[in-house]
Length: 416
Ligand SMILES: [Zn+2]
Image (cartoon, rainbow, N blue to C red):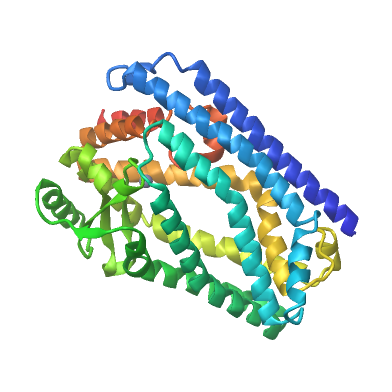
């Protein structure tokens, strides 16, 4: 049984990796083939030079993603069949009793730290080579390191108590432990979302109340029109890390804050900022946020139920290179391996997300200026060097946002 499971895992990993590489190759070819001609509908708004830059940027990012596929597969194999998880477990067995909470926590934290460290070189390359080469990077090595240190501390402060609680529930709650863990997990997510805007976000960024000028006035009028309550509009210093612009809502209920990146406000005209914000408001008003939370809760329910079935099956451990079964090992194996089996569901999630984007665009044009949204989208695609000519299959598989041409065509349709 365990050998059959090993082969099943290898087949899933191979199928997912081959598909990732195949899609990336398609993307590179498609983008390159369209590099020297701006699509007709953008001919007046996007210069050829910007179009070429977007093509080169997309190709560079996709190539890095291809390298990432190999790194990911190698790391996954090393951790499972290669015996790295077992080695980490053995290492801590000399300090703590193997089935103890202390051993399980030390084991899981070590696994997470080693995985993060292995992913670091690619992240550094992306920021300091690719983003730098295309002029998007603003982060200094010093800020990069200080961000990293803070991220690790926040992850430990939140993660260690969570791990302890999960392992405790797995030990003490009998065969239905997974239902208790599910409740805990969702409560944890909700709590993190609630404290994030006031306790976590300010560790990384400075938020200043944004009250003076045309943009805040327009935002207030927009909120009024849409019957939307928020606790203020804030400007965030996103420019210290990257020149990519963004806008988002932070927090829940009436504690929601509207956060605009300074880079967004710098580059868009006030009616365009208003239209972008109307789009974000659309996500709230059309319950996309709540729907995503509910969907996430359903997925985690199914996942934890499945883990509940696997945790006492010897073949699950032996088939993945672990010789000392236990709750912590089960968690680590499950989190590492399950994405490979779920990979072919990614296009479903992407489709769902793109559908929401179209809906939010419709909401935005109903409550703000259509031309403003159209201009904002063109500027954002241009300034972020997002390709206008993605490979259709690559886009269908991965893209959370519809390609620019499709989005703008819908807006024009709505106008007629
Ligand atoms: Zn959106």
